[in-house]
Length: 147
Image (tube, rainbow, N blue to C red; front, top):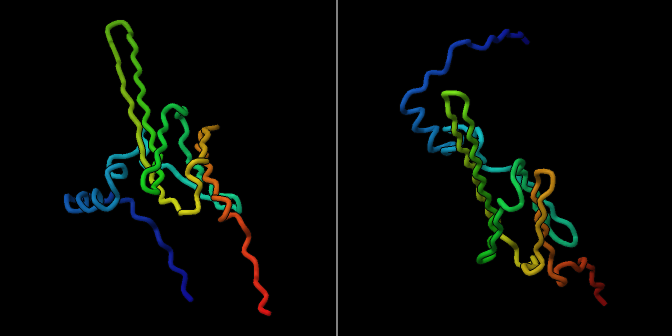
């Protein structure tokens, strides 16, 4: 076996219009423009237990008033929008900045979720949505002995 030394090229990647077009439609607008100050798709963990499901959505820097949770036709939609304005005046200069961040995530709910008992809490930058199962679905499977 021969070991080969590989040195990464210091050349910059040349972006042509064709590459930009492909990257835009393949990666999406947020990846193309960048995500500084914007939420493109927050990370989500979905956990299942005997009693139900739990969705953990990482969205630091928001408050609980920024979130909106809806259920329509067995689809749970979590969305958030946050607008921040900052203004400062120094001698001859006036600076005004606007920052707007938004996202929307949707999840198909199984029939075993009790839609009337869904609860949500936002703590330490993580939105926790609890989706309890209906009582009939909580029963443990058991084996039937054939006589």
